Length: 359
Ligand code: SAH
Ligand code: SF4
Image (cartoon, rainbow, N blue to C red; front, side):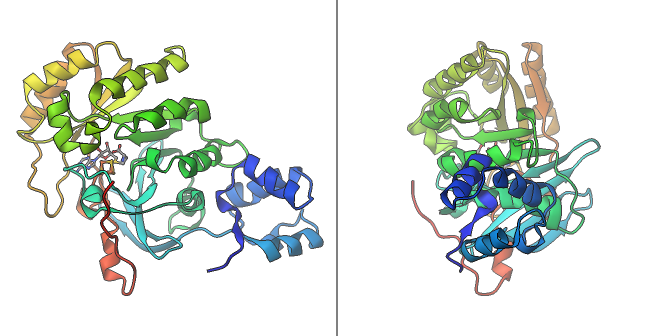
């Protein structure tokens, strides 16, 4: 692998620092952003507003290199799952969800995940490595410019493989590029970071970047949450909700957060659970996204009946919450939430498989 600097994952400030370090004008940073993230051009020699000297200089020290798409699967309903190879040879997945007025990209932030939530296929495979910012923004670059049927992405959710707030710096750097008007120009409403509740980094988030926040809560009591989202033992519900409140205060309570709640049959789906949830969230400005459990090989959990799902939802709505049901898409290609394991890599000979590590 080349030792040259990969500029793909550099935000505007980082590019400006880079150009200043090589004694070039700062406006080159804006020009480079435009070539790479708006025009999709990676080759310095095609950057016609760079003089020959600069082009040669850049070629000597830098590259602009996205990860590689290895396989692409389209489901009947149009959801596209991509298997993406990162620099080390590990595999991650990204999913494009086309809808009428938007095209959402679900990005991975880590290969595997150390947090071992019991309902999650990524968690079951263990942690392999953090993605670099070039490998995170590279997924967006690929979806916009390089994939078959590529079209501009309008929304990003950090809901692929990994826990974004445990790869904080790379996630923030890539989210800055997603939001930058000189790059993809996505507003904060269109970039959502989903976390299982890494409290100290929720506290840091609003100081670093303005994006939308989703909390994967999934249980209304510590006893149950300890079991299904083990990071709860480190950051229990009270501390998680306290940091959510402080996060909202940072924005003068002018916004809300999304609470994600997977519904698993006989585990967290009773009316009693719904009641406790509505009490728990009573002084947090939020909407609740209910996600019927998506099954995967090796899991014993089941999705509740539609009757149970609807009565859970109705209870929350009767209590005044905005509660939505996430219609599962990409199920047939295992491209739905929590099914992302990079397991197509089993078919790719000689590639590194994801290893297990504990937190
Ligand atoms: N680690 C982060 C983001 C990735 S998981 C987090 O946990 O929030 C993205 C979403 O998919 C989370 O809400 C997660 O709880 C959900 N998810 C995981 N496994 C799932 C499954 N089997 N069925 C439905 N949703 C699942
Ligand atoms: Fe990791 Fe999120 Fe899966 Fe939990 S749900 S194991 S935090 S990816």
